[in-house]
Length: 248
Image 1: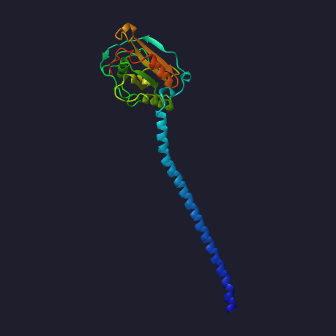
Image 2: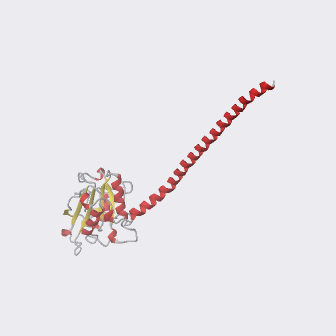
Image 3: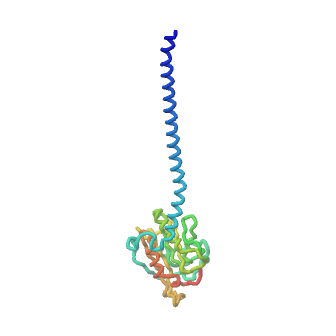
């Protein structure tokens, strides 16, 4: 009997060793998976914390850019030379909602609604843009309007919005008379083929702003957004050179 019992003990010990080995391996694997999961969660948490910080820093960096640093260079913008045509519609107010046929598409002068768009908003999208007749009144007051094709690539629209933000909202400053506004096919046909942005200004002789004979609609069509082009255009045709430069 003693001999039989002695032979059984190694088998029992062997099973116990195997079970212990399996348990140790299981716990080791569990620790490894726990550490891996912890590492993944830590990386994700850091990424979630870092991304808003990146956006903040990047937005701050972009906001410090001058207007000429936004978008492509003037040479790369694919702009036509500035075009000029006789202006019409000085102080010609029509009732809100009246359909106004403009000879230029988009317009740079013409009859318009009685109330212009407010001074503080400088970038519009398709959902909040005022009527064209409203914005033409802004042109009469010396604004430069960057009409942009509503189907323009999204990254270009973003660059144009960044340009609009360089005109700071620090109370009324007439040199900040800039508006970017979309133009769609429903607004009228004739947006320059192959172009995505048209800069427009209603020019008048600063020494004789009411002299209609000297008024002109000036415009420059470009393919790609360029802050340098906008800056140069507004330097050539400032708010003072308009029919009603002192009105907001």
